[in-house]
Image (cartoon, rainbow, N blue to C red; front, top):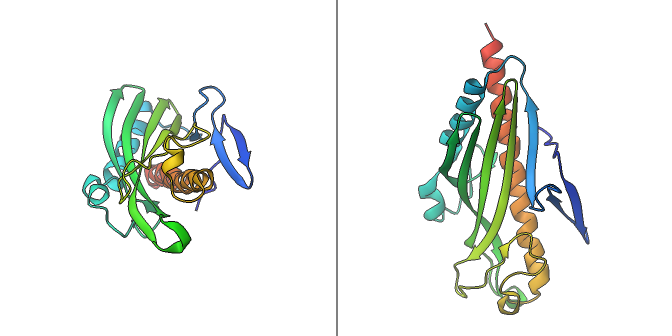
Length: 203
């Protein structure tokens, strides 16, 4: 697995939890710039669209599949809806599940009711592409609906008082699990661009 270098970010440490934040926007963000010599903007854009077509799955996310992962467990299940398509940029509204334990004293195990919305953007220049996974927000649709965290930039969750147990601790767990899955998505983005380039050069 590729090691994802996160560019243009500061690391916000809370205890042992590290949340990557883009200082230019103030948003939680997983991003990188990939250099791909001799690749044109249309070629890079086609690769990004191919990544989304291959790995996104709206029905699986909305159907709350317990598998959580697809393609040999390299990448979490996520849905993607295109909201911006320009010559030099693509942006998708995305949704994925995370599995968090809800309930006191360990009475309930992990559920499939924690939805994380986020955006994936691609920005293209000749021989370069930048991806940015950002705008994270949490919504809970389980037995205590309304137990929402909201935007990841919030120090406390939106429904802090309604979260069972330690609200702040659970909020950090939600953020960290989501970022871990976002990094897995980022790794596959990088693998996709590298593999596509290797195939183009293999003549």
